[in-house]
Amino acid sequence: MSDIGEFVQQIKKNSRRKNQNPNKPAGCWSEDDLINGRKTKSLVVILRTSGCRWSRYSGCTMCGYFNDSLEKPVERGQLLAQMRYALSLYKNEQGIKIFTSGSFLDGEEIPYDLQVDLLKQCVQKVGVKKVSVESRPEFIKKEKIANLRDVIEPATLEVSIGLESADDKVLRGAVNKGFTFKDYEKAVDILKKEGVLVKTYVLIKPPFLSEGDAIADSVNTVKKIKELTDTVSFNPVSVHRNTLVEYLWKRGEYRPPWLWSIVEILKRSKEVAPDLEMKCDVTGGGTRRGAHNCRACDAQVLDAIRRFSLEQDTGVFNGLECQCKHTWKTSIDLESFTYNPLVVEYEKGW
Ligand code: SF4
Ligand SMILES: [Zn+2]
Image (cartoon, rainbow, N blue to C red):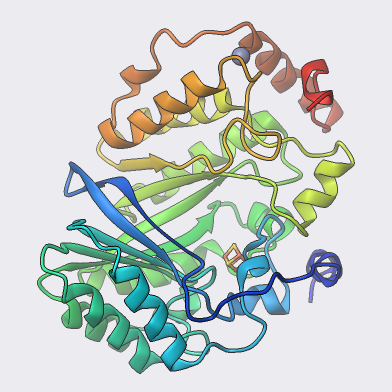
């Protein structure tokens, strides 16, 4: 295991898991979405499983999903009960997104026959046009993908991969991702050949990158994947409990991204890849632990980012102004010398 992986594991040792009910999903809600370019709704289901295998062995520096995972493998009946509960909340959404805080396609997390059963349950709901699952590249295998695709027909299967960055140095030294850009490319090749949609998560501001470098890294990643993926979903880092990012943040050595940086990335990415569908869900936006500006303008900028995700039009950012934009620009200039975030006065009292 790498040094950074060992450190990530050490921090996790201090974590205490909450009492989890294995018969109920960790979360379930309906949200606005885009399917085939049209505004619609999707049902989001977060299944409680034993979580990500990579996280148990080493783990990504910003990921605290293990906090919501079960210590032991989940039983078949429990997973089916979770899905039954989630689908009881179904209200004619056209999409169903199944998340597991790990990889849906990992047979150790969800046995393969159960993956099939869970997807079948989803498409029994008339009106479902798309089912999305998430996976690390190593679990994306040709025969299984082809079968899962057939099981849900005529609905479309989408597989989301958390690439985070197309730069192997960032993947290794900042995220500790445990796979390379080449591994991602191989997995995408399988998905494309089987006619499955690809969504790619791009991380905004991994630790150890300055604000300016983080903007450049996200835009460069879009340049490299624009022909490979159907959708890009930007994930600005929020500070999860018991993670290396939290360790740095508590010492003033990490600041979550500015919302202005997200706006900049979305604008530049649309220039680079105008036809690519781009989304950005700012978890914890406007809080100390999430992407934020100065508080005064947070709600307005967050609303514009939400609208962009549904309308795909960077015009929603026109006219957004605030005094803190100057501080953001200054911090980009200064951080390239200090390599430490500029924590401004108004943030100290939060
Ligand atoms: S970010 Fe994904 S791959 Fe990394 S530890 Fe978390 S769940 Fe696993
Ligand atoms: Zn502001």
